[in-house]
Length: 352
Image 1: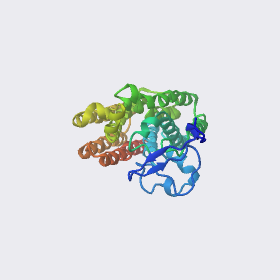
Image 2: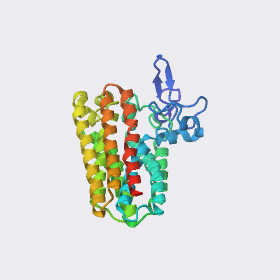
Image 3: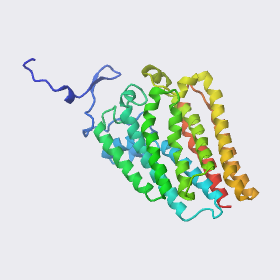
Image 4: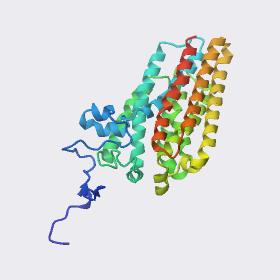
């Protein structure tokens, strides 16, 4: 031990080397920063509301929840809209006033649970994220938020979401609680299977079951088929997303369908996911509506939404270049519009 006092290792700010070769000091996790605004997240849209409008102290936590990238909230919410609209279309009474709260609660809940899920994902993946160019600027690996702060933030979001869930019927509450197991498992799936997108699909489309049950009071086979259609859709869009990181993922040992299929093998699989999603959604619509002897207009309108959904995915495949990360990100984000097509058409069918 020398005569010069040494800062304990746990208290030393991390040293990094910039691209210019100059040493940089990363701020300690969880401590407020002074001076210039801290880094934004690399793959967040430029000029997003978190970076421009949110109070500075809240920005790291909102970034942790991916509030600066709303596409994930949309992809979690859209299956809820599918489930609610199809349940209402199958109901002779159609929509009820309570459905406004189901839709609104699902929207708020999707924002909160997507934030809680992303926070959990970043806690478990913090070492992987630090090694990947696209994710090393996220709040935990960049030092903007400590793990302890992230755990508290995750719990707060989940608690607020629970208040919404407990306003629904018992069957819906039990379904919502059951989904937590999928949320917990998903971040670890990439460590033990080449199909982590399946686990994402199981969790992200659970809202179709929840919203259906919130309206109908119980589950039906049509709801399960709609959920399976959503899983196939998730395999479609998240394989596109995973192609952005396949080189980094290979270096750090993270598995994905993008790596499993490879650039040349991706397109046949994507066509299969497209067909599976359209067929399963068609079966869900027919099974839900035909027992009620629907009008031709109602049935055609509902099926037209499924048809438009399939054509949008086909449009994506025609523009897919798995070696172009910018194109992959653009097409991934386009799935908000793809998913809204059947949601809107099913909602229209429920009004007939």
